Length: 120
Image (tube, rainbow, N blue to C red; front, side, top):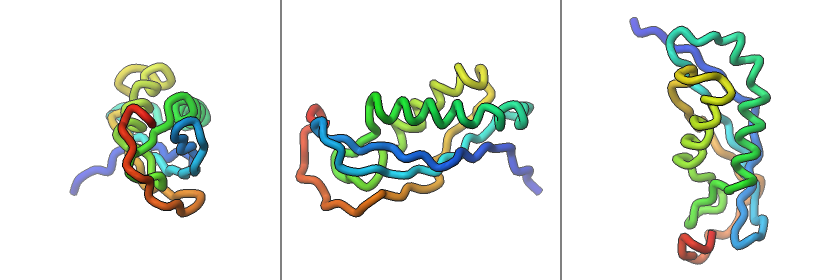
């Protein structure tokens, strides 16, 4: 029987979808941090607000926008940013991976016309 690893689920976070300086949507993400073996779960639970704060700051500084879908965030960029932040919050090696469990747009928006990547 395989052991289930420790994890920390963050409270949902609303991230902006900003295109050409204009807010077009918010996407609420549900994120799980998978902890490394031996990580102190209680200590990291106490830091849950810091993880959410870092995610919100990253999402506003450089929105995780997909060029072809304004109802989702770019999971690859989100995971990479949160893993970088995790080192400063939890210490090196405490978080083994980031999983986006689900995404829920605030509203349904029409698919965008194709934009060059440098216009996002």
